[in-house]
Amino acid sequence: MSNGLEDVVAAETVLSDVDGLAGRLIIRGQPLEAMAGRSNYEAVLSLLWDGFFPDLPTDLRQPLADARVRVFELLGVDLHLVADRPAFDAMRALMALLPDGTELDSALLLAAAPGVLLPALLRLRDGEEALAPDSSLSHATDMLRMTTGAAPGAELAKALDTYLVTIADHGLNASTFAARVVASTEAGLTSSVLAALGALKGPLHGGAPGPVLDMLDAIGRPENAERWIEAQLAEGERLMGFGHRIYRVRDPRADALKAALQRVGKGGAVDTGRLALAAAVEAAALRALKQHKPDRPLDTNVEFYTALLLEALGFPRDSFTAVFAAGRVGGWIAHAKEQAATGRLIRPKSRYVGPMPKVAA
Ligand code: ACO
Image (cartoon, rainbow, N blue to C red; front, top):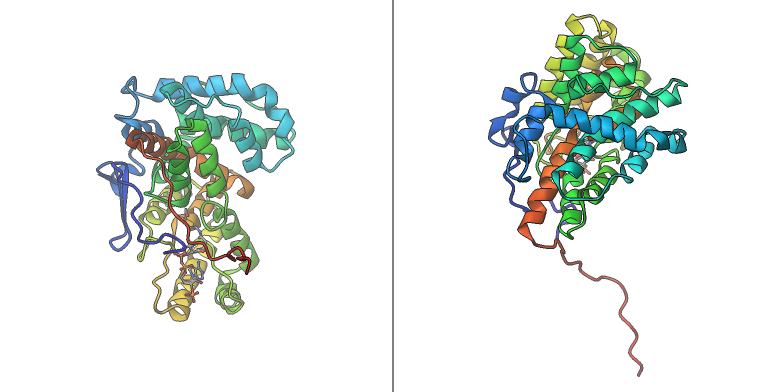
């Protein structure tokens, strides 16, 4: 028995491969480096969904844009019901109202929903009116426009696209596994995605990037990094944005996002002081982790640069996990379809270690 199921192979997939020793991520035959910054989210959806829907169009740009419009029409009236809840919880509650089918239409609504609902909820929270989607724009451009209220520059939109592409799929992570378990019961895609959202929320998975910024704020200046990190480790705390169940070397997604951040930085959207602080914290954390855990290689994971990139794009830190969901939803849907196609219910066993009934003498 393995409590965390490490090294247990629980599915065969054509979708993505995470090589933790080589630090390599392949998405349907394409290395991440070939996609991040060059592909767009709609193209990655086409790649991931290929073969899982009989009526999948070759170009998903317009169908996804139309789905954004439909999500706003379907759920716009309900936004105010949950607008005072934390953004992630409010988005999840609204997504639960989408039809629970298994066909392409359900998939498109689910894939479109975070990109529409999160911006609307953030604006309502700030006392602004929610903006309706613009179906002439790309998914990333429209999501950023609806969040900030202004048409984003091409560099910023490209950076969000790079983020969504980079995190679209990643093997059998906790949220994807949750999606597959639900799909194996023949429940609909909305049910699978809701299970995945619940798994994503935790700080050991998709909830880490907000706390990464809290850490940077608490450290404040590069010269404080070492002392602060040592104190955290001495208290037995984990450093957010470092370590991974599979990677024993640097998470390749960290580099893809660092490159996107540097591109945005050249355009002046990133505070150079913030970047210098982040670099000092990363270096100090890697040094300290090596010293404290010599037997366990712990390197930078995707969440460290996610935090800096999403901050630069103007997302508030308590919305980072919901932005993650906006990308990963495409992978969850593909995995749910792949699992359902096996026709096999996922039902492992547990070992009973509780008391046995007393047998009368
Ligand atoms: N900081 C300090 N110590 C760490 C960290 C960390 N970030 N990560 C692991 N360790 C230590 C553990 O305390 C443990 O030490 P011990 O053997 O002395 O008890 C050892 O390294 C092994 O840790 P495990 O818990 O076995 O590693 P696991 O594979 O379960 O951890 C995880 C993976 C959960 C991501 C972990 O590295 C962590 O908590 N990181 C911080 C949170 C984070 O960044 N999460 C985002 C992950 S990326 C994603 O899901 C999108």
